[in-house]
Image (cartoon, rainbow, N blue to C red; front, top):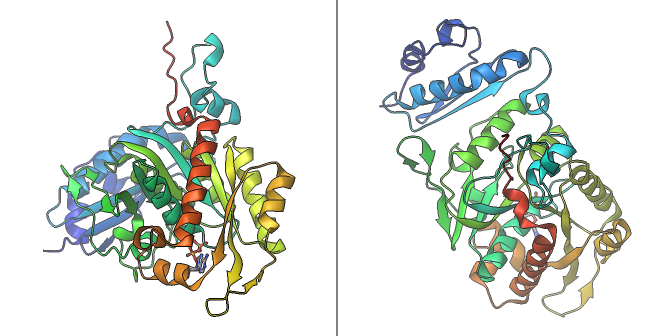
Length: 385
Ligand code: ADP
């Protein structure tokens, strides 16, 4: 039996807000969305009260999960009334990141606990794959790069953080829903040896979702911390396209070991890529390098190569900006077809030239990662005497 809103509200009335009132009478509840047993809503509170509400958010979520018929619950804490949004209310400044995340984060004896985002237990390094704009092949690159890293013997996870347009369900032809473990954590899905998670596994493709800034962060945090990722050498995060506030907040909040920028070779795309690089640099995330996608076109019938978008632009740009160039991938029908039919080329045509190109990029990423210090994902905790 599908749960009703009334059943959920009844259960929520048993949870107390920080001021002792019932959550249902606190004025914080947004509209409750119930779809196929999946429940979503937010709690809007004053920025100053966010800390007090965080445990309540968890209680609310647990209460919703305990209603019979509820498959999953996602409750976001939003703070828009004063002091801005949750995601922005506590920017981890560059200094805090370095202190908490860097291989050099020794805190210089000041005894402060790290203030930056903390790592995901069991995950050695998290890397972001980003692009200045949509449609450049960021998701296709993410999945094939993840498979390339798998081929190097690494245990790899993929988190689809593009909650506005999740692509993993399509890229891997995944229709199943993640199971919960003990009612509190989600079990990620395994495909081609990768451990994967996407908000797209939880919502129907047709379900329109409106995400406000803080909800984005909350959903992302849940996907990082409330999913049983297990032991991973690398987690590849497929970021939403663009370099707006949402991306900046994510770049700040996710404990990234480094970022990869995907670009096509045209000037316009490169301007966007430059913005992407600047964004990560602003929050002290090392740029592992740039990938040029749709770099050139090899005619399948005559073998002639055409530099449709002006090959080499990304390499030159990387040189100019003094960031590594990780490799190039041609524009090719086989890549489009395999990507769009959920059969990524590195997994399904491992001996193809394209799969080799992705594996070469993966090798470069692995080297860049060891240079960047994968230890960034493991903050050093200093206990004050
Ligand atoms: P993004 O994540 O940047 O929006 P996608 O990975 O979804 O981009 O790719 C956009 C479209 O381009 C998809 O149809 C994909 O199959 C196709 N595509 C991506 N890379 C290539 C490539 N190298 N050759 C041919 N088609 C590609």
